[in-house]
Length: 268
Image (cartoon, rainbow, N blue to C red):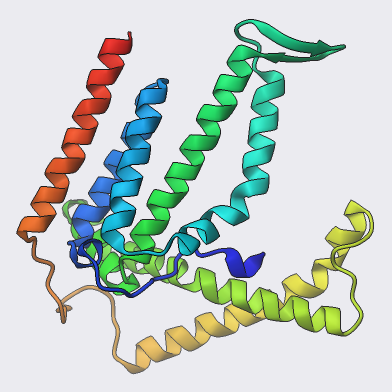
């Protein structure tokens, strides 16, 4: 299961989406989130689905990679759908047994929430799949640069966010190795009561924290050896420069946003 988590991974292939300016991609994913949560119409979800399919076609990311980003959240989706199904009391009652009641509004809310979460995960995954951590750091720093006027540590914040995102796959891989080592020594991690499973996590968490602190210290030492002293006076090997494709992508995204606003007005 841990190997299926792809958050923070970069998938290097040749595509239009890979060549786009990362600043525009971050802005477009934020606009995509606005589109998804702008209304409660199935037309909005259909619009978001078209947006995701278009982005996937332009990214050349295989569908199996998209599925790997969705697979780990299936239990969360099932739990979210179940809670909405049982606790949303709106519309006609379709089924009732004692205190349990399923209504039409509960089913609609469950479907909306599941589709929104899936589309949001796919869109976020496409951002990290098509953008290297270095470019992502530069893009975040560039977008947050107006905050420098109020003495906000923009570069340091962008660096921390990028490093945290970059080390998610590394820590997951380390966790998988520790769990395999514990199982080889006879540890039972998947059986027993809930309390027993929680106790079994202690031999995993301790070496994981030790490994994480060791990696952090090695990274800090490597950065100091390369004379890293923060963002003051630093230059970049690659300078971000918008191209025609970036503006075209932004215009297309704005058209999707305008369509979602129009749909909301017509539905109301």
